[in-house]
Length: 180
Image (cartoon, rainbow, N blue to C red):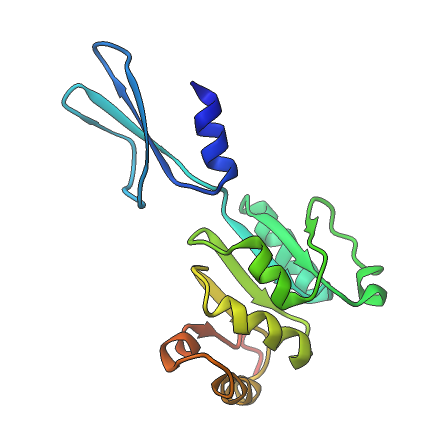
């Protein structure tokens, strides 16, 4: 009975598991987010979904701090950093390295409603590549490091590609603490 549930979790699907209280019959169904466990008549419903995950573009100091905080919150942390010299300085355990260029990595992980993507390299060639794909995805949060001025420049660059205003408007930035 657990194998189909485990496979659904591996496939990053949200599953409702319903158990008949009188017969023990079990039903599994892919669903949209529905809330907390509940009893409806003779059925007890629980929900199992994919682990929240965070893709960080950039293995710099901010990326390290973000990864550590996300792990405390039980996120599955993925890191994309194509620059080997920066990657060599990484010291946070428990993250998953995803090989490739940022735009390819975003496509490869297939962001869903349980995925956040944050670009922190401060290199538009890398950050913008990831953001172009991330803003078209189902990720629940897409953000980028940079000042308000840099965010406006970034949005202008995004308009030169195949993103519409609604997609561009979902970009969160600047991310991080407001330090003036």
